[in-house]
Length: 196
Image 1 (cartoon, rainbow, N blue to C red):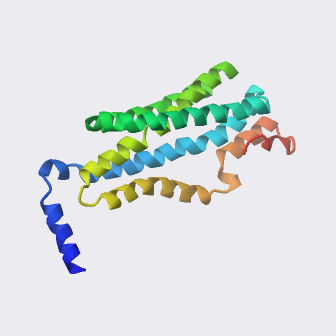
Image 2 (cartoon, one colour; image 1 turned 90 degrees about the vertical axis):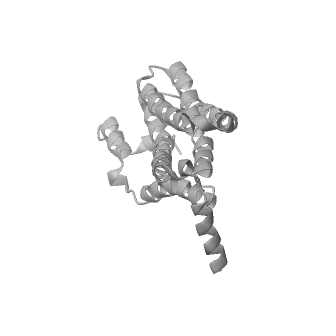
């Protein structure tokens, strides 16, 4: 047991200064970015029911929006894996593009005037989060060759932390509930169902 600990110490000591430089900052940045990514992912199931009510979308249109987002997300994940390998030295730029696309796409989703524009923006909504994982995991793997498993588990911490916090939310604190109450103008219950 002590032999494996000693091996780890010597492996860390053998790493070049350029690998060691900035790796803790990278880990913190990736964890925070991953939590932000999950904030955006979790916002869509809250925002789309509000948009369904506000824009008068049918149930079919509402379901189609989630389908379009998932198709784009799946396709982008495959492409992002290739891009993460091809541009391994540009993982910081890819992570920035991923987070920026999330912010821009949600802004555009908020100002989209009709279903056609919402569909176009939903394709963007699927791209941003899918670009995040491959460069994040690859950059952690490169900067932590001596502790890859630990570094990648840190990456998961961002998502788990946010999910844990969400589990403790109550209806009274959700802005969505407040907005729905204002939309209904105090009228009783029925509009909460279209979502899911």
